[in-house]
Image (spheres, rainbow, N blue to C red):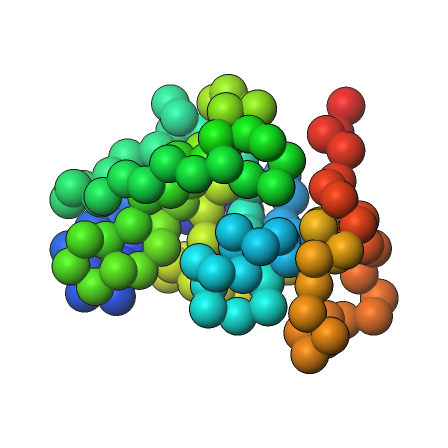
Length: 140
């Protein structure tokens, strides 16, 4: 992958990221479930992406505490409500993109699921995915 682009449903907000993702995962924490309206969120993680991210339009901001205890700053479209990306106070510089906002959704290739202890019984994920009941340890 050599960077990627995406945006919201109504196209009021667009982004490009020139950095590559290092991880793709499903998150089944209570916050992600509520945000997605589903049993999990599909997320693409980019290290040190704050310098590589370019946004046009004015995303709205919502701060919340994740199950990890960190503050998540979520960005979304104030017009159509589409979730776009977020940052996590526990990992400065990292940007986490919602896979549903990608122009090319085939870039999302999940390898594991986190906060699986919070998963509802009806949210069936690929059984081959590695699972972490709380969260995935940070890569070295």
